[in-house]
Structure formats: structure tokens, C-alpha cells
Length: 130
Image (cartoon, helix red, strand yellow):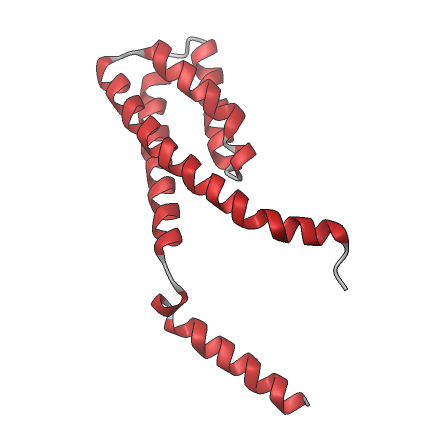
């Protein structure tokens, strides 16, 4: 029997998944704005954006976003001359991450035929054990 904390987590999962989905949608828009700021050389906007990402990525289940935000936030604070170069790399990396996550969310089990093979195998093993 599941304890109450597991039941609460199970009930919260769809809500958290929806928050993650919305976060990724907003992050994609934010990354577009950051790309524009990069093209304009707007270091202040980029630094502010990376600082905010440092704080919110982990909250929504994306610790790598927080880590990237933290690294770039520190580079900006140190007035490192590589800040814009690294910002470009960081934005591209986060765009790839968000794109991959969105693709994953759009997949259905039917898109992965091996999934059904595994489920069929497991179910046949269960029946054989009975």
C-alpha cells in the first residue's frame, strides 16, 4: 500500500508536468529574446536573464539550466571578456535542450514500437509466473 507522501506525489505529477511544459514554452521565447540581445551586444539584458535562469531552472526540474545560468552570471560579474562568446554557446545549448524536451513531450508510446515489445514481454512473463 502506498503511503500518503507517494499518493501526494502521484497526484501532483500531472500538475508539475504542466508547469514544466509551460516553463519550457516561456524559456524558448526568452532564449529568442536573449539571442536578439546577443546580436545587439546587450550584456546587461543577458546577464539579468542568466541570473534569473540560475534561480528558476532547478525549480522546474531543469538543474542544467540553473547551472548554465550560474556559470554565465559569474562570468558577467567577473567582467570576463569571454562572456558574450560563452553566452552564445549557452543560448544554443539551452535552445537544443528545450527543443529536445518539446519533442519528447510530443512523442506517444506508439512512436516507439520497442515500447510495446517490452510491455508484451513483461506481461507474458507475469502470466507465466502465475
